[in-house]
Amino acid sequence: MTTPMSAQRGALAQVDGHLDVRGFRTWYRVTGDLRSGRVPVILLHGGPGYPSYSLEPMEGLALTGRAVVRYDQLGCGESSLKDVPHDPAMFEPGLYVEELALLVKELGLDRYALIGQSWGGMLALEAALTKPPGLVGMVLYSTLASIEEWMVATDALVATLPDEARAALQEAAETGQIDSAEFRAAEREFNRRFVCRLDPMPESMQRGDTSLEEDGEVYRVMAGGSEFDNGTAMGVLNGWDVRPRLAEIDVPVLCVSGEYDEATPAVMRTLAEGIADAQWHLLPDASHSSHVEAPHLFYPLVSDFLARLDGGQA
Image (tube, rainbow, N blue to C red):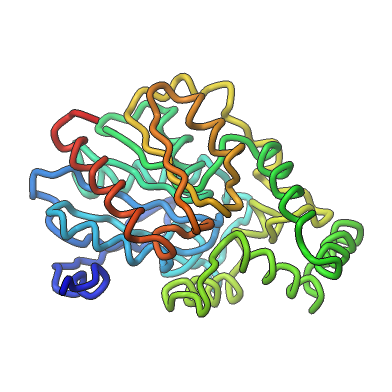
């Protein structure tokens, strides 16, 4: 009988460290051997401000012989600034592109790949457009190229919710209040359908949710504090759009999303068709978290893509 990837992960070497970013500390963990000769992978979590706990299962990719780097972007999780004096205006895409570049330098990576989920995919795109040396490929996982396109898709998904949920979200859009019990219930219903369809949710994702509830500053500043039009638009990310620049992406790209994903097929198709030679796989019976909902499909696709990067064949 095959031992689950998550169980095997515990036997791999792990090293934790901290990176200085503008005088603050960013936490990271390296699983596996950076000197193995295989292309290491850096995991970019979503949110923004939803910490990397939900991506812990991906550390199992180190079982293929490559190193996997997981880190919490500044302002959340193990890199929280909750009790540290700081200017919230620092939370914008440029900070996180800079942070990623510093992490690559800190680890001495001359070749690496990115796996970016949701906001993490947006960050991967932002980073790739700077043409960083050493980037050899990306997995764009349940992500987007345009906030405008994302909001249109979200509105279409909201229209499929029960009447009481739609009413609560409409009220929030009109009042800007997103702390009511009715709004939170509608948010849970949306997430149950389009973010993670597992019940109960994996423990790693539960930790991520708890962390976001305890320290949601980055999410509020950059994304308005919810996935919906709540009267505060999208914060810093309002108007974000790299569709006109997708043709500039010149590294191999694998796109992965779920059948019931909040990153809808229309949203993912923009990426797949806008980036030259990008592959796109739509995974059945999965939503925004296919690495835990459909691991038997997700990991073989990603592992095969990374193996081809090792040989320069992707």
